[in-house]
Length: 420
Image (cartoon, rainbow, N blue to C red; front, side, top):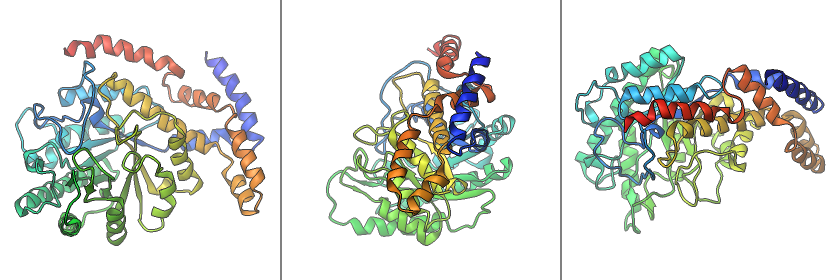
């Protein structure tokens, strides 16, 4: 099969060269771009703080596929399997409830940087960077539906402390790994029905966030991000942390802004927002997801929206200022396969964008030749992209094509099925 892949790639290389695209250069560039896999796909967002507590904060994982990770070691084992099937060297996105305390029962604000040292050791061994998130949901202090924007000072103080500790954990991770940890703050705060006072909660949220971010941290170790949402389960009518709120906050405080593909109206695409956001914030965090009718966090597939996101990053030369992460959780299918399929699609879409004759397309546009621009964009859809993708997988020593499913089925029988 190796010879046939090489032969197909040579032919594809010639086709792309005729358009002025260097496929070898595109593959070399692709190998330098990490995707941050989200740990919570591996256990349906339960974590290890209190596995018996149900989800809250508008979060729902549907399905009961057997074999989910029950311990940090099992989660790392599953991640190792997924990474082995994904071309490139990638990162991990870790939530606070996934600390490794050797079985000790810890509350949300008991977690300290050293509780993540096993994750750091694993990341060093496997050349992974790690990103981090405070977990402001699935906790008694969030049962009211409010955290940092609560009217209750005690509730606010609890979550301010949790987010402050999370930043310290992120900085510790970044310092130990030698690559900045993006620590992203998302809260579920909002009302199911129409509020009588939207203003008060947003004023409180500004005050809480300012307290969270008050201590300066070395940007070589930690980068702060804030994440918006349109609505959630139980906050259908009003979310405190809307896009407008966080766009203003990130711009005025110069934090990173997180755009989640599932956190906007179904007719919106975050691709169109990127060039605007980048005019005002230093860097961007993406949570690449796939909402179906609502923020349902389906496994990422090779949709037009996914391709548009990656095209915008390449066409706008934004890759150097963008951190790409994933955010989906499907409990109805094999969880390792979900990671693998979703991440391979994200990388595949990025490669498609890198294979565009971007400079030529932009020259046509600048000259007013919109006819040629349209014709060339349509021709690109029929180019032999698959042959270049197969070559990349072969170069990176991961399965080519559908073959990765053979390894997942073997892993399922030998490992996942034994978990009961």
